[in-house]
Image 1 (cartoon, rainbow, N blue to C red):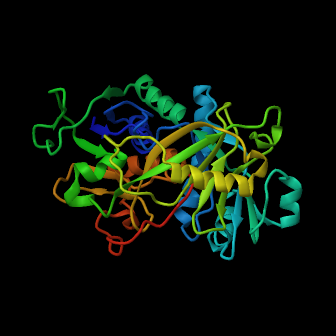
Image 2 (image 1 turned 45 degrees about the vertical axis):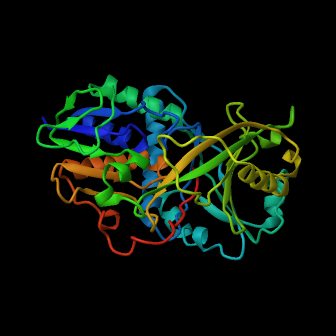
Image 3 (image 1 turned 60 degrees about the vertical axis):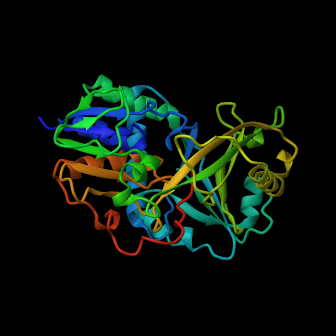
Length: 384
């Protein structure tokens, strides 16, 4: 029986570990602070799940597969993780990102269509559509409970015979004797998969360091809701993505009584995920309030009820990173999915497990050394 050590218990690592286990592998799932911890890119309360991906059909197909797998996981575990609200895309002059996806969404069984501004105003009177040129609505979209899902996946790994451990690797310690951990122990396995998000570049700077994988600081705000007002709860308000200005904003309606989530998808400054202070800035709050007042005017005077600072770590071309370490045949690296990868977790984990067990070749678009992605600003994929 092959033994695979998966380092990182977020959406990518956790789901890959679970699929490996169900394929008959022995699995050890290791995380420095535990599944869904507050430093991780898979931590926090919620993530959007939607299907539009411009010309990138593979992600549309994976999202469709992931929808089915999320629902199956809910039934198997008796937990609600997926909330279907629909997703409202608000576009300006250029609506190609969504429009190009419509044929792929239809073929994948994910209903989506353009709706007129008149219909949008009628269906969603709580939203001001000023400056919007076109509107699209994805029916099956919604949001996932992120932290809760990470815990559920890790519990499934443990319950189905895997080992889940708290532990951190010593930098540069992987050799013939195994992986040395900071507690002095050594983890020995046949294969090692590092799926540790923003720490990948720090652990393997010679392979995927800056600028190939650059953690950036992202600030998120939760605003209070008017008492007794149902229009900003998930029963009447969808998740939304606003692409009408220079900066892209997105949000999730009031859920689990936590308030109305508003976030800026624009890449922030460089950020250290281990030691960076997670306090929001006045500048980011001012931008979020401006969007709230312009797009959801009835919420303009509501207070901030919670805040969060997380990080993105994307490749410059927006595609995932997945491949074998060039100097270690039993070492694989998986990452680059912040802002859009969480929802793909079940389908991506299934794919990654198949590659690790030799069922398929890795897709070259995710190669660690693929050309044309070494420089430049990351291409956005939306929806943390």
